[in-house]
Amino acid sequence: MNNWTLVDNSISLRMKPGALRAMGSEQFTWAHLLYGKLGNVKVGIFYFPSRFSTATDTAAIEALREFGRNSGPSTSVNIWDTTDPEFEHALGLFDLKTVPAVVLATGLQVEGIEPREPAKTPLYSITVADAGVLSDATRFRSAINSAHEVLARSDPKEIASYIRAQTPNAIIAAIGKLAAPVRDEILRWKPKFGLPGGISVQIG
Image 1: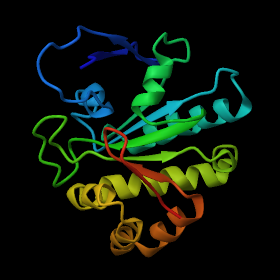
Image 2: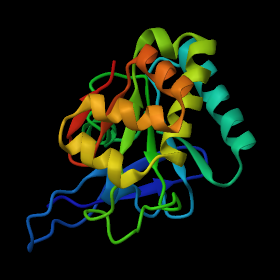
Image 3: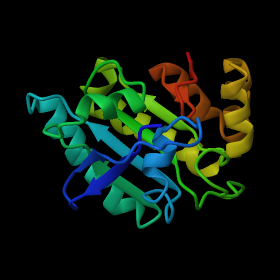
Image 4: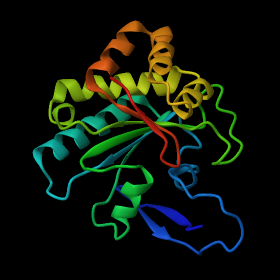
């Protein structure tokens, strides 16, 4: 399979290709790419800007960095480098069709995660790509808060199993057990819940 390495220069992320594995047929996914980055956190946040440095990009990046500062070391905020030669490959790993978009992923420090290796750990992501949400500061902050709450406090095995089974109602019910206001908020901004490898479910 193709092998990629994450490069973090402390300002932005990019990835570079590695050697092609001769043995094994395991698919390389964002879980393989981010496994080390997610090791010491409960939630990893990854923002993919447009290539135009728009007002939406500027406001979203500023809001996410503020969120990260106020969330402490259990949350990692990362901005993807649009000059990355492998930018399109990165978008493909996260199943992103358009930018800007923000992906929030389960960290390995979430209770119940049981890290075993990228392919066997129940990592999942929540993607916010709706232009109306991204461009509205109030809605964007609310969406990030809600998604972060779900990732940090929900049972990752349960949510991952519902994504795999393609049962959005079960995901909604699981979030409702966490907090009804969070469930209602998530239904309003229609996120995508996804697993490494491309399996995803649209909510709302």
